[in-house]
Amino acid sequence: MNHIPLGPDMFYPADPEILRSLVSRQLNTYPRGTSPAVIVPHGQYEITAPVLAAAWAAAADFQPRQLVLLLPVHTPESPEEQGIYHPGIEVINSPLGSHRVIGSDLAPIRGRYLEEEPALDNSLPFISLLFGDVPVLPLFVSGSTSRIADRLAELLRQFRQEKTLFAVSTNLTGLADEDIANRQAEEISRLLTAPGESKPHLPLLEPLRTRQIAPCNPAALEALRRSGITDSPYRLAAQQPSQDLSGKRVWYGGLFHPER
Image 1 (cartoon, one colour):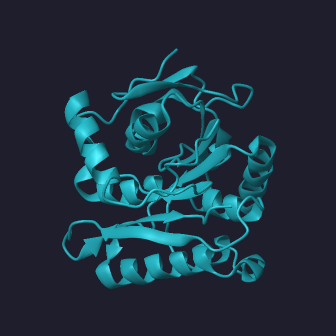
Image 2 (image 1 turned 120 degrees about the vertical axis):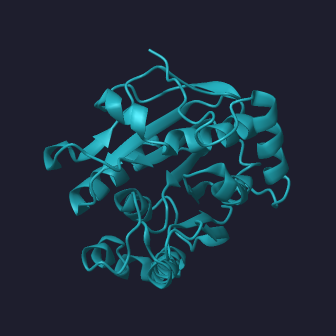
């Protein structure tokens, strides 16, 4: 079974040449680097494309042998479904290329999530254009418990090798009053970019419980922190708020881990 992309005409242009031109133009705006880990947003390209480009460009010269992409599940059916899921398919497609899916021994996700979640499709055109047909492990993360973060961190360590690129798809805030969304985005950026020796004292899940932050996919962010794969501060590549929706915004951010 293959993946049918959701993005064309919903999140980005369906025409491959128009999409290739758009993605290339955005990537050329930002400096290229060899970052081994990036944090990218998901949403309409009119807003998110520059932020996606800034983060992915930071890894453009990394030349990965495989890519692990951690994706959110926004609408789980029940608490019992919280966990980590494989897409259960052999190939994922974008208008700019196809990628073999690795890690098939993991539990498959329910099919409806592949039909509803935009995060995978938002990043695929950038992945295809930058890294060709690199094999990809897309992991859908449902829930925000410490248990899930620990299990995911263990999985990340198993897939770690010299040329594995790690990426988390998340929006820094959910829809919130503009000043709250801004403050929450600043707090998440602070937690992610804190000096390495302070990271053990700044778990992302604690301010989530106290509602000081509200990102989607927080367990994936916390797992990347716990895994030990990245041991120095992230850097902000770009950020952009959504359009004003009656005083509420979503904050999109792109971050990257400094080159090893």
